Image: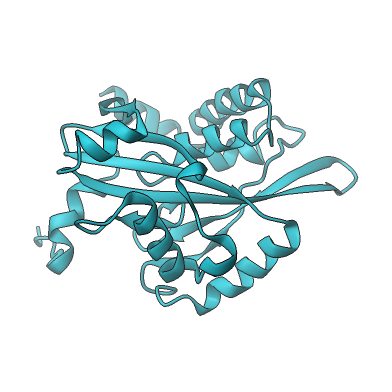
Length: 230
């Protein structure tokens, strides 16, 4: 079998391995993450979102627009990336946001007050920081278009993705099906936390979607479940 060639990405490959268990992550305080674990590798990601009260096809409430993206490795995540040595996590996030989606930092700069949660993976010496910021729907649409001018568009990022925040009549398509995708790191958990704290979806709606997502995976990918049991 031909050996994989990671080139200069080799030092970072371990941070994004598909299928790694999320059970090795635990939540920690933001201050602790920046002091006790300052020697670890840090990564920061942010959720930009807008509320949207329109009704789609006279059936489903849109609820809102959330900005996610297709990454270079074929999985879905939030804009952001690794924090450079000596760089504060929120400063690293703003730098990455400017590079990946061409975010105008004079208007939409993230601050420590936008921090939501930090996760620790001691096995990988990795700390993940997650932030969220609300914008108007008009600003959100402008950010989607502006993304095409980002320096990393077509290199690290391959396009904006909006999660559908509704569940269709079969109880599976829409948000549950979206949750069955492959996500980078803790992006799936971050999305769920962000939606809850932003009051875009209720806890009951989120839990129902998570359960339906498991059903979707079992029905659409039965061989995947069998393989995991062998």
